Image: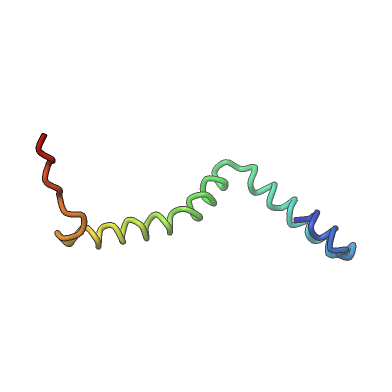
Length: 72
């Protein structure tokens, strides 16, 4: 992120703000409890949506019906 700003010829003030934000994020991310919480906050909504969609789809018997075994 900082390298992109430097490549885009950002001002010294903008670079200082980016460095301060990166340092703050690094400090927060060093705590394992907060890191776990951030990870769950990213994944949990997607998991809930997938579970609800699957539960809705499996309510109907015609969805993925059982197949007859192939006779040998």
